[in-house]
Image (cartoon, rainbow, N blue to C red; front, side):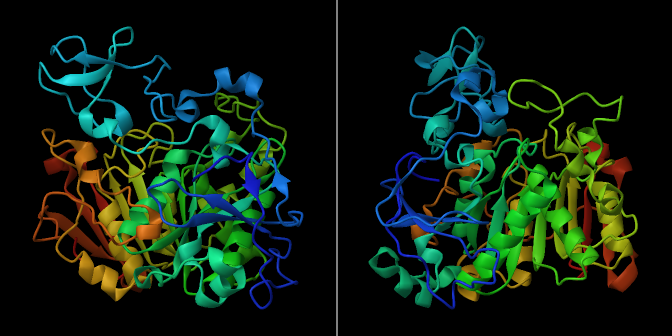
Length: 499
């Protein structure tokens, strides 16, 4: 997500009818233009949702940070991201990295996004001698996340927004926006994925936003990023309103199927929206959903549970926010109780996730999908700790599933038909090398493909046992006695596809 939230100019006129519908919840939207980095082509448009005030041309808009600057030093490490943000290279603790030599003793493996690669002795690396922290050469070249002061996801606590690259807008919308809009690439015409970053409903992780858009763009699938409202000022209903408004806006701007890809709390948000639509006897606002290590069980957000330690930052107070109980809405239904509802679902869980363990979160949700006969795929194995994001192992299957659901185009599918099937790398393979070319600028989507070890056969060679469930759902579970609990994989495919 480019540019600074404190330097936004409303240079685009409001989108006219029929794109803008007065009866829609997105009626008060205003498009604002953000310049992309030099490597990108075009600009990203910010559409403010849910009652955002209209801006006159060339009006300067200043968005406040979601956390006051005086508290930035107390932010959790997973949102401060010293090792990922800004131009200056730092270690996880915020120390500046200097050029050093790997001697094979002082510096362990690279820890950027679970890379795990350790350079050979005598290799030049960036390292912190005080923290014994190092970065390999591949991760050193990887695109950086924006610093806190220029991160759009860290600003605008009262202005939910949808970030859409101008090249994704339909032809008639591009004409309404004038010369600022670029032609729509043919490879990104089939449906749209709304990316909902996680962050415990207090923050929005940048690692689960633009990198996801770039990965989907490289696979020929259009995606946008949703900045929804957060605790403590807003509750779950407000956040669901933001996602529903985003889905309505995307349908009016682009057409085609709409899916939500939610990480952690973002997965809980997407799943909760489906429940609310069913309770109101309304059509499902989403055609599909991808839930990656979602927080399905809201028990950790219950202030009345004495066994649960408070997990909220709450502006440095480390107490339960006033509107935290709203997150408990529909908790029993999400776990398979009365009122359960969901669109077609792709579900991802990691057996080593201690924040959202599959047994308490994704396993009950997958069982409820199976009982209710909802088409779904459940990928469950050891992907690492909570927040593994795009680590190889589920991304290739997710792209194939989205294509079967009508996302992307046949041209994109044919372009990558030469086996870009990502799997967890072997210990000797550099993990980031498999993702080195995922960061493709959205404006030039399709110009590059993900690189990895070629594989001619996508089917898993593992021994599986099959049981046919409701609506022909096929359950495939690896033999835990052979592969061990950590390597056990559970795949549920309504089409009966053999992985």
